[in-house]
Image (cartoon, rainbow, N blue to C red; front, side):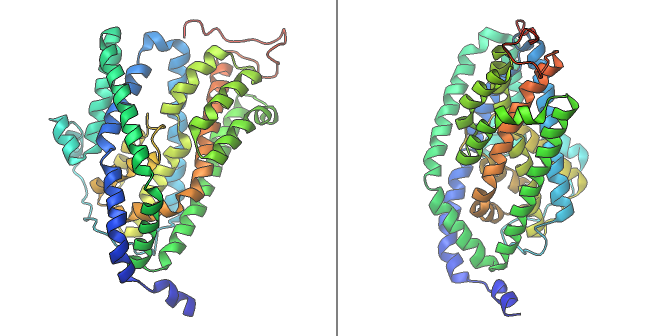
Length: 396
């Protein structure tokens, strides 16, 4: 009883002092949403959407990536819905009640009449759809759009650097966010966050089994030999919590494993933009956890729209520090979810980031092997063996 009373205590004085710092940090994160999403999505789809350049290998890679990320998101959705780690947290915030959408209105509002207006309002779905359409338009006209695409790539690097500056204040922002969350909601919120961390690890491990091991077994790729080569990039990603840091090792190990360099060099860059399975899974779980914690009831159409929005916004943002929070801070207001929930998640993100990043890399190790197997590669043969059969990727 004493422990329960302690968990229920609130500390409004601490919350009053910590909240402005936490809110300032969140405002800085929100300020990069529009420029980051616009520039990265335009550049990603402009580079990744040219069928003539992608060829057969690229098209198969994109199909694989979409299937893999969809599976990851569904796993996250099922786990967080079944375990409901946010129930009973009683998260307090400034969220407005989400209303059941009219389907026709939802479809209509997906399309912006003005991209400037959409950016000013922070309407993330309108920004995403406009950016994707513009990127595909750039891909369609090819070299004539090169100057604009390079501008977007350059602007995205500027936005990334600005985000890095913002993230230098992450320690202060996270500490203030946790102090504000505990002060306003009581120490009991820590129990809910602990349940969320456990549920997140469970979901990530389920994806490792269903999204990594099962496809390898189905494709008759020996698990032990695959792990022998791919454990190095996995542990680099796991230890550094950076997908980018593991890319050189991943490419090296894929080549040592026997994947043709031309195939690996095509699928890996695409995968870093389109195949962040661990991050996609986490975005889904974080969104529904906050909805549960805040007592926000989401209808099935709203849940499906959240999944669709996250599916699109997770593309092309691998280089953004704390990219998950940039995406979530743009999503929450549209569905009546309090940003205070995002502040609480910041405090436990380090406990999840390792396995999340590790799964990002594992998924991007499986994809080249799967595509190569799809092309007729025999994984039991060593690359220097006469029996080694490499796929023809010259058209890619």
